[in-house]
Length: 502
Image 1 (spheres, rainbow, N blue to C red):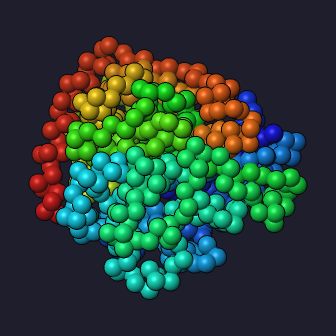
Image 2: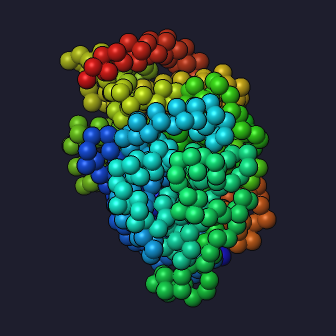
Image 3: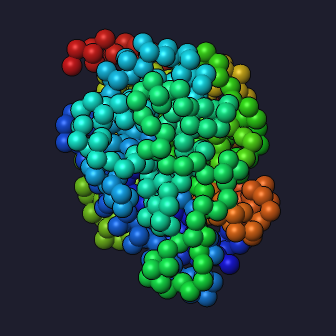
């Protein structure tokens, strides 16, 4: 029996069908856009996302004729808000996690509850990324939408409703909304009441240990060419699914996922709700693995910054890649200099990520001379992103969370240069799974456990997740980057007073 993981990311979706041994049977991917109708807004046509995702599912299902899918689950971007009508159709574009319009709503939340109380209850620090302030913004600024919406979904419950006819949201994704009681494993009724958000306008919570939440609608199954039932299982946040799909299923194991954003997920046996993590804007939420929690760091830019550089500055390499089938990033970085570059890139092109979560910060490239090349600038971008990673790893250690090694997944895990930079700059071994599309694999493993293919997630990981490469830190490069990192740490505090005047 094959299983399908459907990943709904910020800028694209993927559907991958896996065999029981973790091998890939078929895959499909589509891209879609982010809408910016006003400054600080980030929205998305959820109906377009549904159409593109369904195209992916149909294409992937075409490759499973000899081994039809028995189950599927979703890995989704977090924090988006989608008001829907009675038929589950979006009434307006989704408001994405990266949207930063909700400053005033966060100020109200700070006054009404206090940042410490909200963090202790929900595991989420105050920030515009959260779902709760987005709902408060909708109620205040778009009253007609607020009144006419039957429910307010995130992408998981939005898709589960379309696929099965009934919505459900995983505890993993719900615990990223700032509306979920982390200790009680329920919607936080008192917080919702104080904010004027009826709990019955949110999706029902799936079983806390995961499992089946529905069956694919018969008409959709026929469209896929599948004759038997296809179970739809509880999935979760894309980064949590990626953590599972990379083998992060024990306390102290960690993953770095480099896609549109760059994220670190560290598994914990109990939620570490310390002031160090709260002040560093580290979110703490439920893993898709029953009984575990995750601490998450975030860099909004990640691979999106390298993609911007490719599209804006490397037209020739991009055209050559289209013509020859080569990887555009490999072409851009082919002539990158050895060792540390002489440039410093502050990768805050979408504001800073953790620990500052400062929407006023901006990107900067320092140290340019006429001798610099596109390859050198591209490598400096990778260095800057990896310096941000090191800052967050040091913060986690300061908060009492030990990290022994990092499992690297996502598009960035395909670059040996970037992987080695991570090892050298962070001083940790970087291990790479055979399947780097870990979010899809993690979702598929949840589907397989729900369908009875494996008795539990540990058994599923043992059977399917294979770590086949390790990049170890190199002593000379580690020493050279230590000196450069000390200078890098001064850039943000030096430039932020200027950025606040922009």
